Image (cartoon, rainbow, N blue to C red; front, top):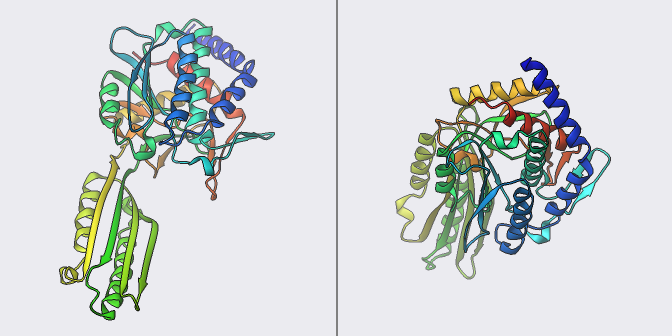
Length: 383
């Protein structure tokens, strides 16, 4: 009897979503064509207003957490009890400026555009899934929280504590980021840290000091890259390296922007210690060196509860004839701030990727497929 009930719900949800595919593509176009660079507060808040409209229409109340530096955070819920069966986490912002934005473009099988895979496709999946649950009169039977942040591009510098706090009130936590082309669900993520290293020649008494600065910068660059240890989950990548010098004017300046992915917290602590030792003290009289430690995200580890949640969504996918694969992501996301004792997964958004030119796309069919998966996962949550 239970199997027949689930099968009937599957059919009704898929039928509801298929009949509204054009509507969801239009919704996605509106989201993609609005630039939401993390510092474009107007654009970010415009998308927040759109999300508020759709969620309010299906009975969600909302709370606005006002921000000055970035767009406002929004929290939605259909429960007055203060705890939730599931918390859904998404982000509205991006790191892409208006000048580099690719606007919505629909092909026969793919949809292109900035944010279509990273975050905005997941926002449409969220709305579609909840509308489908309402259509089969199941939405009110689950206590749902939704947190939409606006500082993901700066590694949740402001929202980290809010994510932890909201997740503490939920049994399950699910991230809305996009899935890779093989249909992956994210069961673990690397931690992330960034560093800015600047070097400036302060002693211009001799041309030899310029040479010393150049040698030191070259050695420092090599030492930093050598910190990578992929087998142990450590990836070190300089996102920008620049050294300028002039023998006539006796001038030298170097800068390195460093991005690090790591598997365990102890690894990044050890790396920080090594970086600090890479600048020999004997150069302190001729070189001024400054190391700025940027924002960090912790690791999302594959715990027993993550595995249990993965098995649950895999079972749901099987009833929908959807192929899933669990995966580790080297990149970090908002969900990394959720504590380890939670049932949590990421990557429920549509299937797609970002190519070598950083252009995003999703497979069109996956917008409906992932919406059905999310709807039926919420439908079948174990209390």
